[in-house]
Image 1: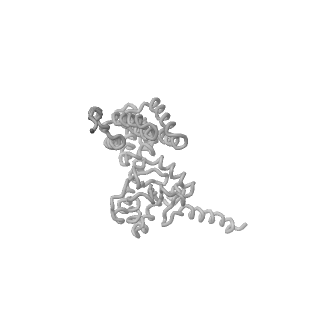
Image 2: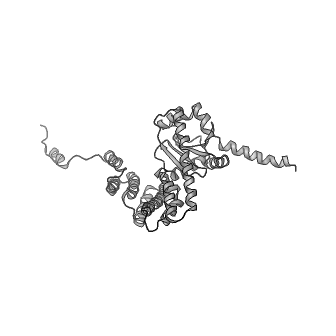
Image 3: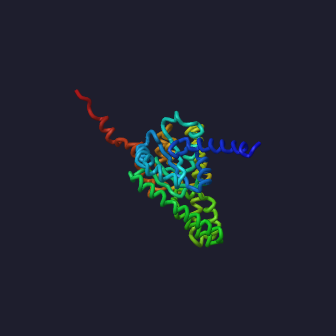
Length: 324
């Protein structure tokens, strides 16, 4: 066998990979693992677009005003591997493998609505997050994304310094690195660094231990809630509610952590038991009445459970004489 003939299978494999990885068109891929491989081989970051292509108005505006522009098409691929993670209502044109992949990633990444944009390194660890589309022109939008790459550069430099440091010095460097990242991504994606901070500040002298231990706890809660979401989908909302009650009894979350758990419990209960749902949502509000999520909870309670007419008025109506 000649060297050329031995090389043919490798070339064919590479071409097949390239075709599959970028089947979404216009330099976009729908393959998460493929995007990470390309990013690693080319030394690029990943731009992840969680979108609802056929139903989400801001997603459609972002697509037409930015992603479809010549400015973005020419400039973005120089810096990023473009990954689209679509959640359309009509999934008839999507491969089952892609649907399964996207559902899994939806549980792993902290999506705050659609669209949610992440910039991530080649390992998939995000360092930038943006929710929605405010109407920014394509050139300004792309310039901002490119500028955000410095966050990853600074993060990596601080991680490198931390690896060479010990004790409190290491904790301070890691804290400085993580403080540059969106708080929503730290718990899910930087557990190793969090654990190192907790260990390095074991006596709490730096005031970091308690804060990062809470992040570890919240990450544990988030992982269990992702599993419970699967229970609801594969079994029933009632089974998910039971799993939530068992988790609360076991882990004993408080404050905002408990609030988020009870909010989801109320959502599941609403489908079968409105009274229990209202009770769970009210308990969620009481757990952290001044949290950022509290106004949304109050609005949910008002919309889902409008106040009943006072009983006194009902009694008076009942006593009104009939018309002659």
